[in-house]
Length: 245
Image (cartoon, rainbow, N blue to C red; front, top):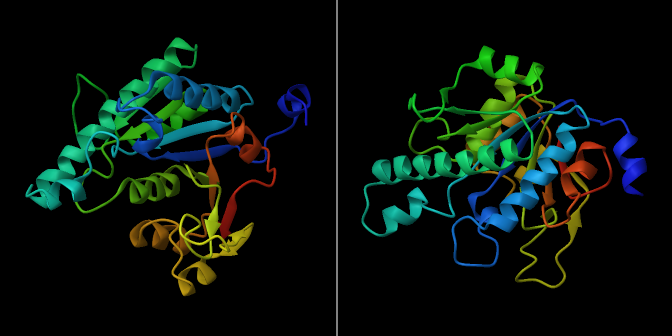
């Protein structure tokens, strides 16, 4: 499909939550945030924003600090989780800055109050931003320790009435076993929540998965390395693995 044809197609989804792990910002180098990778991701967000899609981004902080890693080094788990939440704020501000420089109006909302850095998370304000054509970036997770940014993505998606969660990763979908360890691993095009639970497939953590299951909110897991992956997902093309009710 050519770029011109794809750009004119009607998006399948009107409002989405894009879940990004912090690690995707690192790229292949040692810098926590690779400017080339950041620009490429933001370019994909801009691309779907220009199609009229209402976009929320939930970003992790694993490229800077992860609470569980801190706990393994002797850092108190609660303290480590708060450190990880602050790392997501750094990543969110980097994405905001990059999008704004591309001409995309953006707002950052944080679950931990920090008025000089970002807006507090207020549901009605977030929805209003979306209706006005702004990209909204949710940072600081849920504001609570022991909850991942996967859970934050599921919670925010349900709160704002998103139609789907796009989980953009470095893997091209959900497999029946680890494709890095097993050459015969099979990728699913679609799978139900119940089957994913039965097979104990790693889609999201259990709290996030339960939120999506209970509210019948589909999750699309796909590889972000394709320069138009997010656009393909928004247009309903066959990409990655769709986990559904």
